[in-house]
Length: 132
Image (tube, rainbow, N blue to C red; front, top):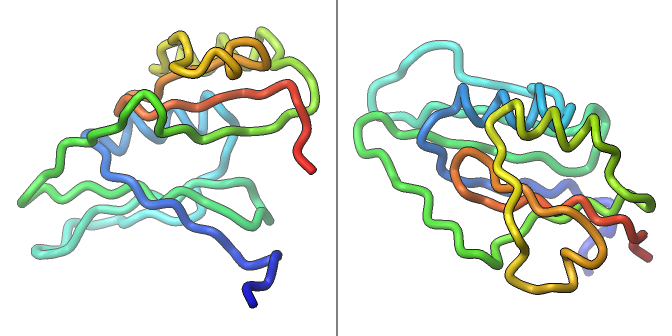
């Protein structure tokens, strides 16, 4: 049985780790938990962002020797259940940090939140509902 408090890591390729950092840190308010500080031949550049003390984080990767193009679909979502509508300053910060407000593929998310694509095209949903 999996411990419900187990830490979760979501890994995604990124075209530009600096742009991803602006979106998730300056825009969304996450913290940089770890990053590579020097280029090591044969290894990926990494940026890990998440909430301080949280049970999850993103690992954003970039391989300068064999870069991968991110291939998100309109239904690859990262949903944050806020329990209230996202406030306009948060939405404005995400847009100023390189995000693009987009209509949701599933109208449920437009009814209950806001969808913003990150610089690599992955979609963040700020949901006004609660989970659980």
